[in-house]
Length: 265
Image (cartoon, rainbow, N blue to C red; front, side, top):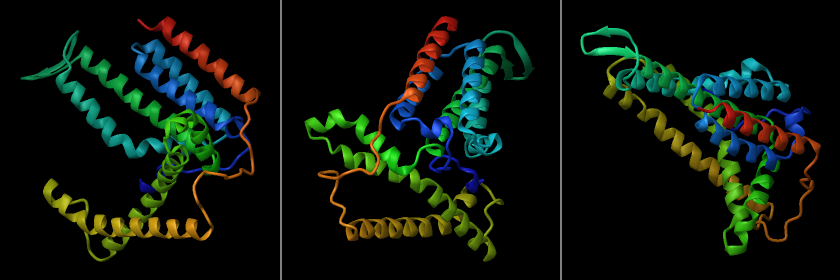
């Protein structure tokens, strides 16, 4: 499961989304997240699902590979479903056994919240899968540029955010290696009660933290050795420019917002 996390990874390509400006993609994700929380009926969620499927087709990436990005959050989705089935009441009663009952509002909310989490993870994965680390850093820096006029270290913030995203798959890969090494030494992470399983994670957490600090130190030394001094006076190999693809994304975002607003009850 750790190897199937798509957030933070980049897959080179020449698709519509790969060639779009990272600023337009990030702004679209912000709008999409807002629309996901605005959706409140089956029609609006079907529209969002169809739009997400269209984005996946435009990325020219494997549908199976992108859907694997949902696997790490299935526990959160399952917990959310169970929580709403137990707590949210109202409408027709589908099942009753003693104090436990499954009612219409609980099922509806469980489905809607699960779709929200899934849609947000899928679209966020598409951002990192189709945007190189350099473009992602520059896009963040350009979007946060106005804050630099009031003393905010825009370049450093953008760099930290992009590095954090890119470290996700690296740390997951390191965690997988540590788990396999501990299992080869007789560690068991699947048996015992909850407290016992939490105790079994200690041999994973400590080496993972040590490895993360070591990688951070190596990265800092490498940047210092290459003369990195922040964003002041830095030049860029490729300038970000808005094109027809970004105009198409803006137009599609406007249409999507109007459609969701129209069908929202």
